[in-house]
Image (cartoon, rainbow, N blue to C red; front, side):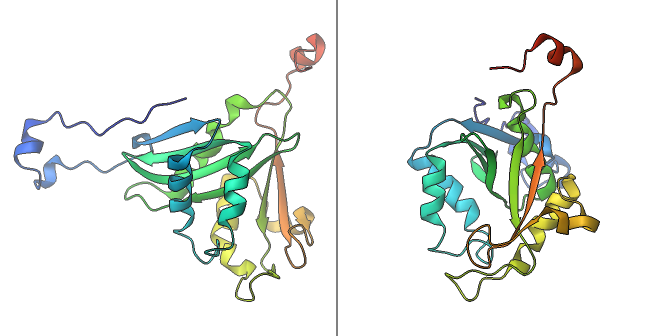
Length: 211
């Protein structure tokens, strides 16, 4: 588990003249730290929901929180931090079918959302057994919700673009990933599946992947 790193101020000029443009450095993805958790608590839950609440069109306020809390109880959790501020989140269920869910990021100047999401995904790779797959689901363009008439799958276009940019969803052949009514009536999704650590020929011969 990686510990959060507090911002360091080791430049006397920076402290003496904090508004000097020459002392400012644009942030990069290296400034974003990932913390991994194998169990939840009040602080983790608070940080996680804080990020999801940045996307009210995608995550309907008052409709999703109980599902997040339930999933957090039986998942490996990754939260991205910019200093002390939570800026990205993702969980991976511990069930036989390892499902990635509740992915979200928030804007950090100088860092693309795609970079934060990619770092979150890769933070889980060391937990995966050789040959074990990660599954992920994103609403289709025509998805609806029987719980909220204002919900529309069109609002998840940023998420679909993100998965396409990361190579998990193929833009020209999305229909072959489609599953209708996955989340109930109208809850259509695209299913993605990938294997972070493919079994090598040597592992197949030795049987290292078993167990």
